Figure 1 (cartoon, rainbow, N blue to C red):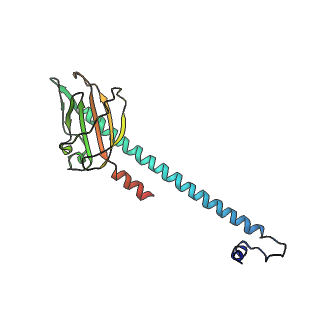
Figure 2 (cartoon, helix red, strand yellow):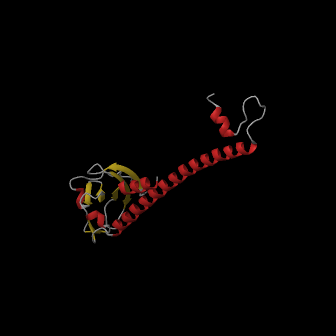
Figure 3 (cartoon, rainbow, N blue to C red):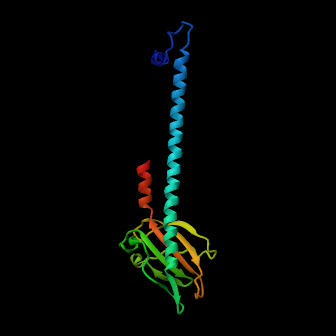
Length: 178
């Protein structure tokens, strides 16, 4: 009795008649199941690809800002100076989640104004290879940091350049897509 609805849906004749559900109905049902499986798999695949795209794009933006900060740097009389302010307006907005910092072996040399008394802890990787990692920001923001050790002409040692940005905007883009 509890399976009668399923038999009717599948087009099955009454029990004991010796006939099974029609071939056409079974093929349609099987096709519908495969279509649903393919749609679910496609959804997961597209979401993953979009998430990777947003993360790569975010990292590339931070890398461009890091390169720009290095380009603004000069060593005069053994002291590191920036020729002008960093090019990203969000660096100038209080607690925007966008920060920069330059350190040497002794500690912080220069940093964005809105880090206040906080600082970013460099990995101090001497390789010069770009480092990417996540840290908590001054207001417990989820910051993505890109860092590179750079040897500038006229400098006695390497400087550790860091650009950090709040991942909230990138996460919001991902959530809108999903």
